[in-house]
Length: 565
Image 1 (tube, rainbow, N blue to C red):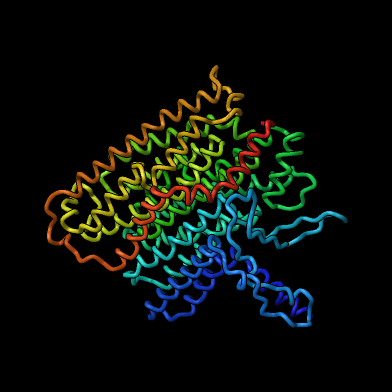
Image 2 (image 1 turned 120 degrees about the vertical axis):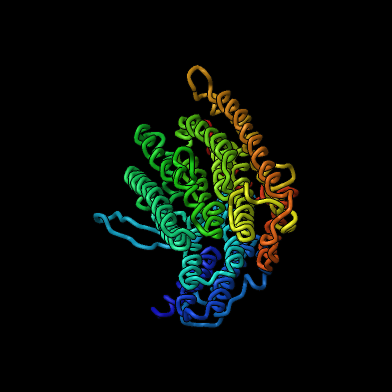
């Protein structure tokens, strides 16, 4: 009977779609470890298959499964336990409901429990769930991993370690977007850090510079993790009567008893602690200096994961924790965060203008665009929040395309110096066309993926909300101050048009050297075509993503418009 119950518990745990998305790459990592080093092709195929399986689980959340499959009961008729008869391994694969203002596919299992006294206990939960904030980022992660594996198909150096670490990191990336327990979030936060550190330093072209960039990345993010750990511990300690680290329960406490009776100064310190942890990862100005060296030295595939996914875990946490748990502090600190966001937008764009290394140029442009996400989050209204989420995904797709194109250009010209790259339109028309498409998307051209996120974030900042009128910046109310910042942020949009057009003017015209006229790889076409299609699709049909976030935006707006803050 005990073995049957353990089997039931295991199947129940494994039946959750979120768990399946994380287990697939983990199993793939373990399988790769068992494959002999000489069988490089087998390792690549294994990595791709398990990454695609994870993507399949993610897509099924959107589409759902037929009712007959959802209700499938393979253990029907067993008499060993009553709940075996009702076990449905695929029972949670019902279609995601965008308008639902809560978590779906949630799985809450007690992981560990420690007794305190006679009646109380301290517990950590395996608590995961998906809503309109996390699903777009989970799907982005699951989509990009197969693409970067295909892009690196030509690699031969230490593939067992490279592919194993990549799949291992995917578990942490997905986990950071679905964890609903602070301890579990911290675990996944560190989980994705270590593989990225090894991949930056171990596979850089210049090992010495790569090692320095990796160490800088590791130190910055570890310091941020310390602030995260301290803040989550204090949040738990002051939440009297809540004997768990679960984020929804602690958020509910902080919005109720914690707000009514709590010490404002202590809650402000907790907010700042979380902010520092998330701002390093985002990266928010002025805690961004680790990013350009990491991008410059990392392999192109890791630059993609770093810019398109890992940075979004920081901005995701802004919306998941800061503005959900501490909305009143969010208003108090809003002018500071919005100001830093706009400074980052303009400073990043200005530095991008003077870059000659195409990869560093893309890296600094990423800092600028992340500022729009932070500005949208700081505005704290449904439109701005939708813009922030949209730009996380849109920027992720665009920056992925740009970094991979930079790698393709370097392969042809043997350099990343834009002064030495000429005639790309003649040497590689397909690469040139994709560069033009992604450059226009990066400057926020209408009907492409970069347009709607910037538009909604700026419009939301202009509209802000009634809560901002209670915040004073000197003698000016916060509502007017935020509108001024939004107007100033438009400079970043204009500057992005300047440096993107300048890039195209430098590298596309002219006669290319014969050495640059390399044959187009099939992997380049396989990867870049879907990315280009997605850039156009997100620009032409924004409602596909906007509607997905409706439930989360409604939930956050209900908190912010409650009149208490």
